[in-house]
Image (cartoon, rainbow, N blue to C red):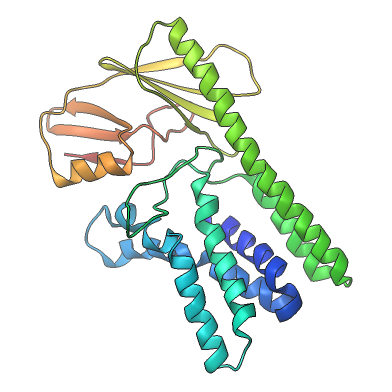
Length: 291
């Protein structure tokens, strides 16, 4: 998810696992910093001449489930030998703040390489959007309670409750994905469309959805809300044949998990990542390459 939310999650998780041993201030601040750490891979784009650098490296090795224990052990060793601090407390803080970052990203559409370096498969559950205030605001409330409440027992209980509620919200996002998929498949069948069907997250809410149906030379795209039973309004795009191949094309196919619209023009091809789009312009997406 977005950087701010990852920092908020790191802070609240850090307090949950290390608030007693390290205190509220340290567990919140360092939890937030460790929670942000995996997204430092985005800065590769600033030092690389490759225009695809961010897409190549973001949610890669720093988002692997194997990164969290290794880096947490490194941090804890520094804390123990350089600063004479408790190894176990700092390992717990760093590990949980870091590992919950890629787990949260897993629930989005972008794709997270959880098993790097053993696999470059991009895992995604299409459950929640990258920015969702319904998820983020409760975490802010928890931090304010921790900072202002003088009763530590009350602060811990409220923090646990909010982490439980936000976790349930993620599960609810999976249920909304299943509901949206059933709805889209039924609508595609009613149109006699036979082909690959997928549902992605929309913006700001687990109820907003983006659907894509591949049918022959056509790609049908729609935005809808799961709380609205109105008929799905589809926009259809022609899928042109891609007659060339290159490393960039193969990379983009991998990055988009094959969800590509190919549009041929006079100077070559435009490849769009159809997983993302901005309502009401279904193909004004975030990623694409020109060949």
